Length: 629
Image (tube, rainbow, N blue to C red):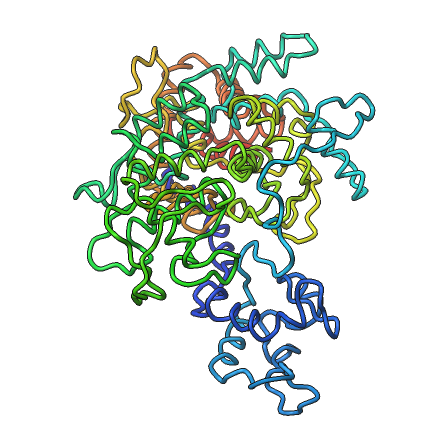
C-alpha cells in the first residue's frame, strides 16, 4: 500500500467527521449588521439594552439575549421574541408603541434565528471603552504576593483573585523552551539551544533564553514578517501586482523588522511613505467597477483605523455605523487626508453633494489643514496618529502582542478596541511601558514572556468572546501555516532553495516559509491572499486542511523527501535508533515505549523510505507537534 493510500485510509473517518460537524449556518443570507441590528437598535434598544432591561429582557449581547430566554437558536417557532413580534394583542406585542415590525423584518428575524442567531463578533449595546480617556492612564500596581514581583503577574493575580480563579501551574523547561521559541522566532528550538538551556543551572536561564531569541534579528524578523504581511495586506504575488494596482512593501518591512524599528517611527513611515513603504496606504485598485466604499481613499481610512486603532470603519464607509460610534463623515474625513482630488461623500453608494474635509478622528489631538498638499496632510496625520497623547495606538498594538503570545486579547476581538478589557490596568501598564521605552516592540514581548503568567501551563478551553471572560491562563494555539511548514522543513531538511525577498547572506540558515510565495498547503493551512487586512487567522481545523494534510501532494512530497534525508543521514542506524532521533528532532523528547513500538512497526526492518515517511507523517499529525501549549 502506498504512503498516500495509507494516510487516506487513516484519515477518512476523521475528515468525514469534520464534514458532518461543519456549520450549516454559514450560507444564510441574513446579515446581522444590516438586517437585524438596525431593528434591534431602533425598535428594541431603548427598553432592553445598556442598563434598561424591562421585563428582564437584555439584548446587550448574544449571551445576555440567550440568558433572557428571548430566543432559541435554530428554532424560531419556539422563541419568545418571534411570539412577541407576531402577536396582535396590544398587551403582548413588541414593540408596544409605534408601527409593528414589518413583514420583511419579521422574515429576516425568523431566518436569523433559524440559522443560529449569529451575532457581530464583539458587538455589544452595553457601555464600551469608547468612553475611556484617549490619553493613557497610569495604573496603580497592586502589591506583590508570595514573591511574584513581575508587574504583569501582579496585575493578573489581582484580576484572578477578584474572580476567585486558581492560577495554572508553571511550565516545565521542555514545554517553555518549545513555546517561547515558536512564539518569538517561529522555530523549533535547535539542538544546540536546547542543550545549552538544559545545562544552564542559573536562576535567570529563562530570561537569558528570551534575550537570546529576540537578539536573533533574522529569525525574529522572518517570523514576525508573517504577522505584519497579514496585517499590512502585503504579499509577493496576487491580485493587483501584475497591472500596477498594488505595490509590495516587502523590502522596507523586512529591514524594519531586522532593525527593530521603533513602532511610532514604523507607523509614521507608512503614513508618509517613501519608495518601498507606500504600498499599504495606497490600497488596492480593483479591476472593473467598484462602489464608493471600495475606492483606495476609503480603503486608507478602513485599513489604517483597523490596523493601528482597532476600529472597524467598514460599516461607516457606507453609512453611519450600526456597530460603533463612528459616522460616515468620520470615514470620509480620514479618506480625504490621502485624496489627490476633492472627495465627494457617498451614502450607500449614492452621491450626497457634500465634499469631505481632511481631519483626524479625535480633534482634541490636533487638526489637519485640508488646504495642505497631500504629503503635508499625510505627515500631519502621522504625527497625530503617533502622538504620545493617542493612547489608542499603543493599546492596540500591545493588545495584539498579548493575543499572539497568550492566545486571547486583553480586549477581544482585537479589532474592536472599544470593547472593555478584562484588565484595564494591565492594558494601560503594557501600553505605557511601550511608550516610555521608545515604542520598542521587542521590549513588550520580553516583558510578557518573562512573566510567570506567560510561563504557566495552558488553561482549559473557554469561549474567548464571552462577556463573562475571565483570564485563567494562556490558551493553546495552533501553529500558523508558516510555523508548521518551518517545523517540517527543519525535521526533514526540505526547506525551499530560493527566497522571494533579498535577505542577504544567510550563512547556511534555511529559507523560511514566510519568504516564499504560498503553495497549496500554506493556503490550505490559513495563509491568506492578503488582499484585505487580516489580523487573526482561524484557529479551527477545516475539512480542506484535514484532507490536504492526509492526502495532499505537497505534504506527501515533503515526507517522502524527508524520508530520503533521514535514510541518508542515519545509514547505519537501527529502526529503533532512527525512531528515537525523529521523535527528538520533531518533539524534543524520546518516544514512550508504546510510541516506540508503533514507530518501529511503521518504519519496518530493514528500514524502508515509505516506512520512514509514514512515521514522519504520523509524528507531524500529533497535536503535540501542531499546537503550541
